[in-house]
Length: 446
Image (tube, rainbow, N blue to C red; front, side):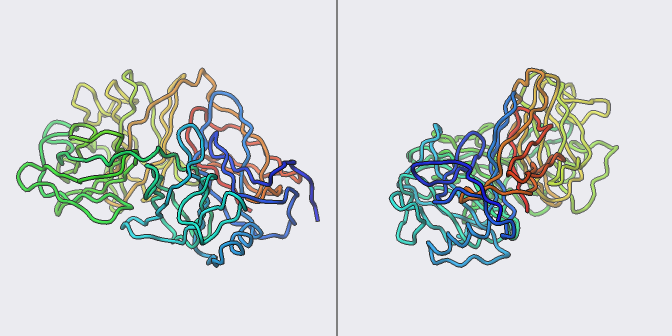
């Protein structure tokens, strides 16, 4: 056996870094694990880079971790299904107690089995119905796909995560103390119309579904007005809009602490296929059946950004175009970067999740966006941050299991980037060339 002491602590715990936050899952051991243990590919949401190199702990879930959690809860994890470990934190990084959590699939039905950690014993138990002072919970047997982690009571907040088959997802769910429910009203509008690629007139009879929430509403038959009713504050929603004969749209919206009453914050968009082909797609591009497209905005006001979409392997995908500011945002043949309105398009993307990046000298930003077959995705506006000419940084640190054992020979990478490395025999890794001022998903594999 190859074992070494990593850290000493008066109280046993495991540290999992998600961005600048630490996720504590609980342990009483600190040494390296045996090299022949099994491991589950592990995804960490979200890592936020800055302008300088970072010391970052990476996690991987081992078979010993899983066995410990099964022993504590009595649950049995199916190998092909997913596992989630998460912590509820307020915006200042303080754990939130008294929060119950739902894990819902796209159709809004519960998936998996949720257990909360006891603050005194640090064990996960079937006898708690909400978070203790540690704010931690785990979920067994998650069907592969996208799920919505959401606060059901005690706080307001949610997070969409993807759970590939047989993997583990570790996340920090940032929430706020419970607020009064807010209402959401708006109008469904056509995206583009003759001679414009901007939101245009009302479109009636559009079906509106918030993925990860049960039920739907339909916009009015005369004016396109809709009323979602009471919704949770501080929630990010992935909303599907559909209507027979139209192109489905998937758009990201966020409910804040105040009511959404139409306008850019509350309204939703749908695309007529003729308008899509004539106003959103240049003649030089032929849309491929079964692929999707992105129509987004880089919110900077000056333009000059180039945008790309990378799949999970780090490969750049799709055909990129930019809106012509003088032609109401319609894609311009000779426009090679964003103009002041920031509109961009990416065509012919196979369905899946993409790392969306916008960069120009001295500025950068990124986000992950879902793309669907024969549909249009409308992500949140990308908000660039200064890089101070530090385009790339180095991540370094240790790879540890959830029980805080060092893990050697683990592949370390970032979803959507080609860079990767392997931890050495001392569990240390160095990952170079990571973009600064980006939001990223870490991935460990052994």
